[in-house]
Image (tube, rainbow over all chains, first blue to last red; front, side, top):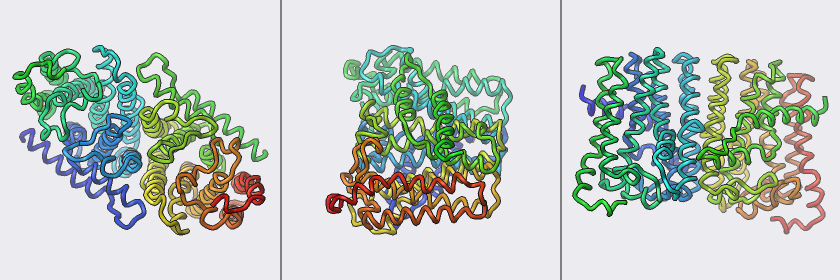
Amino acid sequence: MQLKEYMDSIKCLVEGRLDELLPEAPDSPEAVLYRAMRYSVLGGGKRLRAIIFLATCDLFGLKQELYLDFACALEMLQTYSLIHDDLPAMDNDDYRRGQLTCHKVFGEAQAILAGDALLTQAFNLMLSLDDEVDRGLLCQAARQTAWLLGLGGMVRGQAADMALTGQDPDLPLLQYIHYHKTGAFFQAAIKSGAIFGQALPREMEALCAYSERIGLLFQVVDDILDLAGDEQVLGKPPGSDKRNSKITYPSLIGLEKARKLAEKTAEEAKAALEIFGSKVWFFNELPAYLVKRSFGVAAKVDDLPLKNFF
Amino acid sequence: MQLKEYMDSIKCLVEGRLDELLPEAPDSPEAVLYRAMRYSVLGGGKRLRAIIFLATCDLFGLKQELYLDFACALEMLQTYSLIHDDLPAMDNDDYRRGQLTCHKVFGEAQAILAGDALLTQAFNLMLSLDDEVDRGLLCQAARQTAWLLGLGGMVRGQAADMALTGQDPDLPLLQYIHYHKTGAFFQAAIKSGAIFGQALPREMEALCAYSERIGLLFQVVDDILDLAGDEQVLGKPPGSDKRNSKITYPSLIGLEKARKLAEKTAEEAKAALEIFGSKVWFFNELPAYLVKRSFGVAAKVDDLPLKNFF
């Protein structure tokens, strides 16, 4: 199967199930909360974390259908983090995935609550697998997801990012922020799949190394896209990082080096999984796919004086 | 043992453990996040949900020490909900538990993140019991807590409350809001203890009925206190509900009837647990303890013209 086909088929499964999982209750007193949740979760997105998680399950021969709700929980967590990140007190973004952000449509209070509800419901959903999968593995996967999405990762990275916005950046600090803010989520997706698949220690180690590279790669590409991406591809006006005085890879090391870093990281990611041989075809092709996202932009930027961007 | 002594001893255990569980990392890039979390979690509070949960464990002959981290997780969840409720976009409160609210001290961004971190870390902490207690029961308790704190309860109630603020109140709607917003958390605490204790169906049913009554009772008392409570007892200036045009029991049915409702509900709570006999002494005494909190206020208000308050 081709990469794009494989990713699309999982995306379709996940989006169909998310549609079922998110209630519509137009006559309830909290109807606006359900609308806000559905609007943000079902309003597009690459579903990359769900896809990576289910591809890992696949790698270990597990039935993807059995783990679909766990994948949907990861997408709920992803959406919660975007809703809260977009709030006026945080990145103050008006657009996301090509549509107005949650708080622009439903107000700040309901946006905060929609994020809280998605975060809480994600754990409810994960733990609902307890009749179908080994409970020890389920506790382990849900527990490490909570750690990597919170104090051990994403929230920690976001807090550091907010605390340091506007300060003089350096590379180790930028890496620290993104290792936690972006990388930890990819780790959670891959490690959860590997936990369910009862990966051997050396397999787990290889997958962790891979997920760290993918997290970095994703962030570098995202920074390049934000710098000068096409609004249609990006789903929001580019330049949000600059407006918010965010440290980014291109602003710190220059666009050319950032592009080189993306290519080098993609190679390292592939190399990390050598022990698996050919059965990791999806994981081998994914890094190049991510790098390609930034190609159009990089080419476009090459024609313009760099001072426009930094 | 006396009620006050019993509650104080559990409170002391819980607060000691919370102090250990919340990291201080003054040199980390996200030091402000840890400070915000510690400030809000350790800045007072009755620890009522942790106490009720551990008292339920006690009722079923379980060792409280083994379930201490689950109790601490409930207190983290309680603090998360207070931090987010106090935000400018929500109730916009400047004081809580006698000190400035989290966002007044650390800014809105870090307050939102402190809430997110506490919510996520609570599930990490709950699931860390997986080596010590039955994993099936743990999944069940954590799962129903996620439901009752989120879409099945607290967040749903808060969303309805925010959506309906300023509208013409009626009693069924007020009951709907508080059943979810306040009551569901007490249900989560008691039901989790009963799940770990492997309560018989009729025991579970009795405890659920009790927890519903306790939730209502707590809310009525809280409304009375907010109306005209002493700032010292309340930890914040009274009148927040009125400023925010919140529907409350006293504003809807009058103070005298609200006080009667509290007393009646306390009796119903006790009656719900008759099947347990004398071993539920804590649960029997708790309702009267809660009602007493509102006595001083009610007496004070009786001397004043009611129009001052409605």
